[in-house]
Length: 156
Image 1 (tube, rainbow, N blue to C red):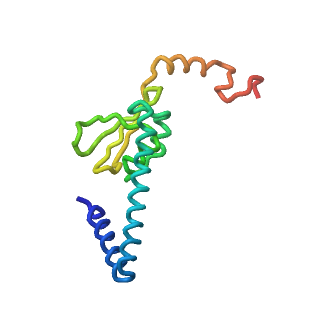
Image 2 (tube, rainbow, N blue to C red; image 1 turned 60 degrees about the vertical axis):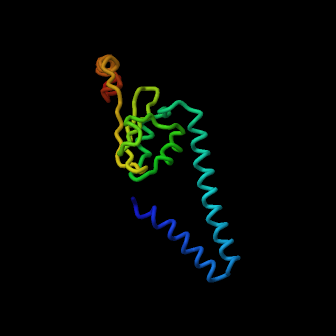
Image 3 (cartoon, rainbow, N blue to C red; image 1 turned 120 degrees about the vertical axis):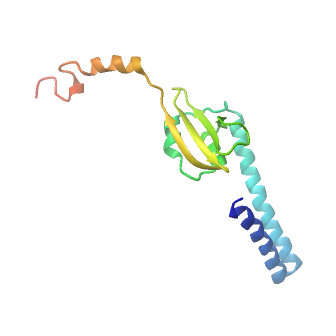
């Protein structure tokens, strides 16, 4: 259990006590209204992110390379889902920590993200090996007099 799971409710109770001591019942109602507004805003954001993610295929992302570039340590799973607009495909059984989710793009590149207690710990981009295309591209780039060598066609 993390400290924030204890500290946030204690802070809410402390605000309620301060509201009571400062303004009586009106202070408690004001503080309770502020706490309720915060909870409703968080709930609305969560539902909006999940509704958008529900409209796309599970584990799909437009570009795995761009996702890899945007990820940062300690991001929440909800933030990553909001960035990708898709729920990641689970790679680990449900309820097992750490959780691993995969997002794949059209080129079969994928990002495996490892979350521990909802926070991003590490991620890895994997790109498919394209042996046939690489073998075909090497002879074309090595033709004499071509622009790929860095020499102008007229020899200068």
